[in-house]
Length: 300
Image 1 (cartoon, rainbow, N blue to C red):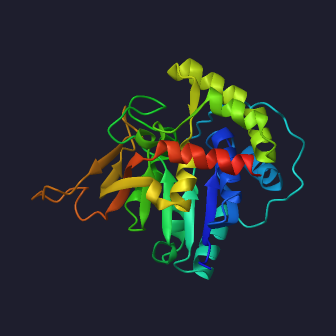
Image 2 (cartoon, rainbow, N blue to C red):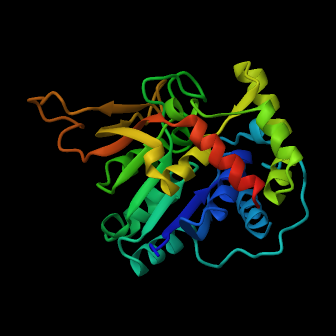
């Protein structure tokens, strides 16, 4: 039997983060060896509490998208699990060094923890198998403002460190995740199933559906985080191009991700010269992603 892919999910739960974590826990192809937490949808302490809750069952905070508790204003009881004493950065570097070439980090929030791991341990970039990150808005408008996507906007300096680190990176931007929509009909189907994760998601999705209806005039929600998790589970679901990515860290376009396809060689030495290549997703099999998400939630 093929060895399961070890993944660490760096997360800011978050309603679609919750769905992504459930999908990962229900995916026999991967082994979730840890959850590390970062601010984004909610503050870090609450993100940690939510991550523990889900496992057992600069700051910009998107509580208007996910509810003030990050999980659709359900105000669940305290989780039974406990956070470990190690920091996220210590855990990331330790696990990647313990299993060189075997750990994929799936980053679903701002890239602060990943950048700190890269900066604190010279071996991290060499030993991590891949970093799959939800971030960027490549050739489309952002979702914080016209220039920037939320996770990159949350810590653009960290994002630029990660993109230029030389690690094997796959970026899943909102240009791709906006192709993956969970509809009202899908939610009804989840509600009728007996899956415990499906039932849980139905409890917390109201706020998220309401936000999408108001912000995008859609009858459905974008599956940003589950798409990113499933790119780790089944890489054939997406296609990508390769090139360099830099992040604008100041001014009106702070958080902008710019892709350079390397087709032209520029003579002058600039901030783009000799930057490592990364992978940027350009298409996704949206129906297949939704089908997998539905199946794994309902069969829980």
